[in-house]
Image (tube, rainbow, N blue to C red; front, side, top):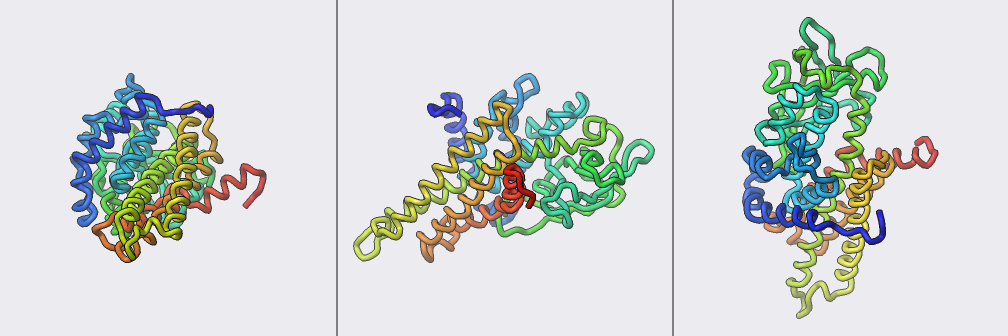
Length: 382
């Protein structure tokens, strides 16, 4: 990225549009969605009408034809308002449909990708498993070929959008050998009688619906094997690397929201006839938070630029994700400290933001996994 990098007028227009949408239409929905732990499905249709589900996809394919920087701007602004809304958006627009756009057949694109862009169908991505953690190669869900298709058996855990999804991309082993080439993706329409979906209750991103899935002899027809070919493991890896840059923008949005709330409180809260922000201990916290956010911002958008240049590598994606997610966690914790007792009251957002920030030092690959990827790029073998 050149030193004179700046956001284009198109980028600023995207940011302004999403901010208005959040302020006028989405923010009033957040509290009820958080309290009931239920995502308002109609929001997907609204996102589709505004072209926000197709930000990253070419106009020729029905998308908005924008770049990864624009995608990260949308993520940042949605997360500034509510990480739960941004999480459901992300699971749908990237993980749930990007592989279909990338390697799906024309028929699969028409049947799943096109209605997903319009918000007429909601998507999710079934990868994580109870025993596998962040190790994709340890995947145990199996697909066995049967007349007319496949039977899937196994389980999936922490699957975003599963309780409200119309279809899921599900990763399964199509060969007995424990090799990456044996892992394939299936498009599973829901409901499917072989899928038992159990909604989970979470401490963070409560309005984004997440599930544990038991898969027992679930039939999937041949035309729902993604790309009509086995061995789509490289597509999974490419999707995860790019999405790590994306969720880093989510983390940036959370960090900004926590800082802005704390900064405003430090100016309004008076103790001993003095704004608490004028006490050095508080002022230094805010100074550190501001610096951390600015550093994370440049790294996130550098990562987005690398995606647009086609030069993103796994280690760079991991650096971006590690720094941004840890920044969101640290900044939101300091925000609670600045608020004091008020920080754990639900009338203020910083407690919710901190709970949500924990999700991204775990989800999309833990911070420890990111450090391992970075270390391996340096020639070590952790």
